[in-house]
Length: 113
Length: 114
Figure 1 (cartoon, helix red, strand yellow):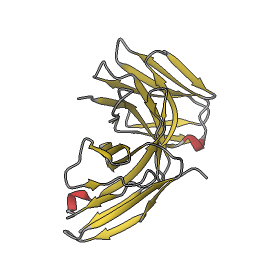
Figure 2: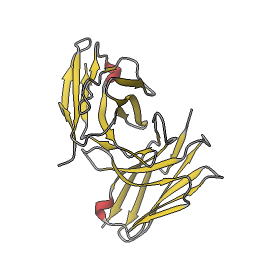
Figure 3: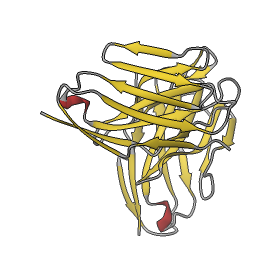
Figure 4: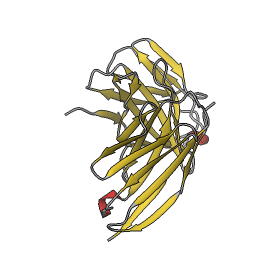
């Protein structure tokens, strides 16, 4: 089955710095890669996703890149703010049909004011 | 307001006492699923449902049951809870867009089995 590795497990940055979280996956059939943000005491919330026919996607301060050949994808957050502090999860799945996503183990991002 | 609701939010119970965690969504989504979240393990899918009366196992289904009699509801049933089912549980629902599922998660249910 699919295996998703996520690094780092903890990331501490100063406000205004950039943050990068990386994930690798094993199943070459995976073609849908969402990222979720989980704030303390809440459920995960989808913040951005990318499909295999796209190499990069941006939404304001957040961007995701995908390298299908190397089987890795990354989340980039620029100009970090304290409210970006949360746990971030990547996931990989095959779109269409049944859907059993495989999640990474999460990255705890701490943005220091 | 579009949302996924779960009840109860917190539950402490004893081994072997049957319990049900309810999940409801008001977005008319076809797809619903249950996850458990454990420290260091991320989110693991327990069961999912593609539509009414259609359910299937996820990665960790042992010890759990589900039903989907109505589109909006997807309860999780633990017939005989055990301490290893102590966890944080999330329900999620999804529309089917662009051949992918964008999941909307509920607020979570923290279950402790003693």
